[in-house]
Image 1 (cartoon, rainbow, N blue to C red):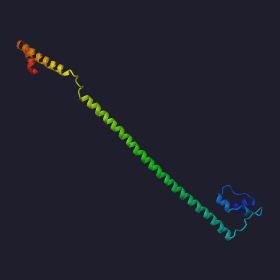
Image 2 (image 1 turned 180 degrees about the vertical axis):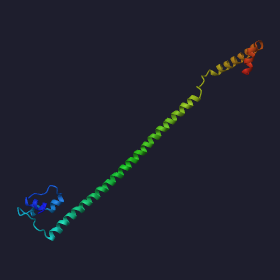
Image 3 (image 1 turned 120 degrees about the horizontal axis):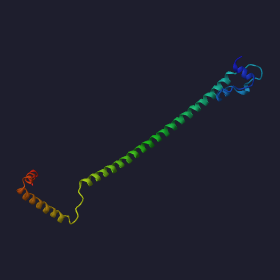
Image 4 (image 1 turned 60 degrees about the vertical axis):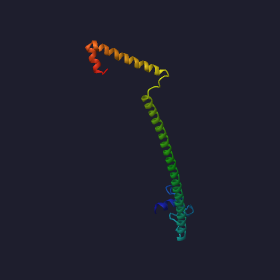
Length: 157
């Protein structure tokens, strides 16, 4: 007497059997207290195997549909990530252009002197006149003093 004979004898279904196995072990086939299974005909075996096969085909079709749906969602996710990548590249490029323009403006402002006021032309002439006067004074002083003459020669005044 095997385990299934004992289970049938006590009118219990084994808890570890799956739904497909429970269908094969049909409760109407259980014999009460006799200790053995009723014999199954070939036709019943073929019918049960056919039902199991059709259920498995349905499960396979469901898995195929699920796999196709997952592939479609994966492709959509990849497209969205690609779009986000291009958006990120665009934003970073825009920020880079802004920074480069700012650096260019800063460099240009440091190199170009500030604009002269409108009366600067007159003051520039005054500065040139004062330079000429200082040169003349240094030359006159250099004729009387040898140390000043050496300095004037050194700076080519």
